[in-house]
Length: 322
Image (tube, rainbow, N blue to C red; front, side, top):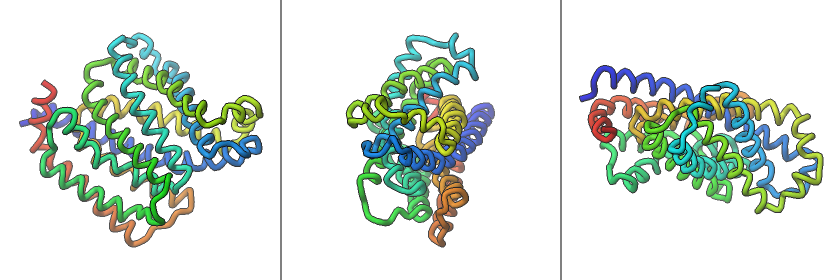
């Protein structure tokens, strides 16, 4: 039986993570706008199709690495070897997820990308099972099923299956691994220092694909960077992706997710495509259907089931952390 303090901590974590899904939901259309503008730059003509989304990811991590110690100066004092090791493994999963997601997003719509990314809820229990042989409760399993059904109706991918959809699916697997890593590793290391190390390590890792895209000449031999910096439709959404979309959101995830069961955290994250659809409707021109409204209702019901299941698995969570 969870103590009142534990229950209160879980409620606070839930509120913060739901708020984070609002931010992350808004990053899909923001990234799509930035990618479209980067691809429209004259110097990007003839570049590899993945060049613009990959460079957006690189710029995002580099900017986050530079700004994080300015916004959270105590991160410098929290650098540890244990934090570096944890950040390295989390960075591998984070960069893999971001790479597959951002390249897949360039080939799909924001709502389709959000749906496929949120299939993370299917993979988190599998990763937990592989990691610790610990299966989720029946209530959480039901919440996962309801959330996936709601997401399918909400975003309705349609249009067949292509490379973009496959890449987004791979990204959801990587994010599932990252969610479980946060649950296992972050309670044992300093928060701010490890998060900063995550951004620092992710910067060169995210740049590696450029070397394999044949895009080095596009980057170094043209005024591409200058064109990007002078294009408001690139750097405005980029600034949004870096500040609230990366520094704030990942800090919240690293701080609060450790107080929740990873499967329940993944179910909360299924709210992300709901907000992604709302933002895409308002700012990117996508439209709602009856199926999307029904899907959103089922998704919210799934999250309610997950919240009601809290008392059933809270004691198991505390035993696992002991």
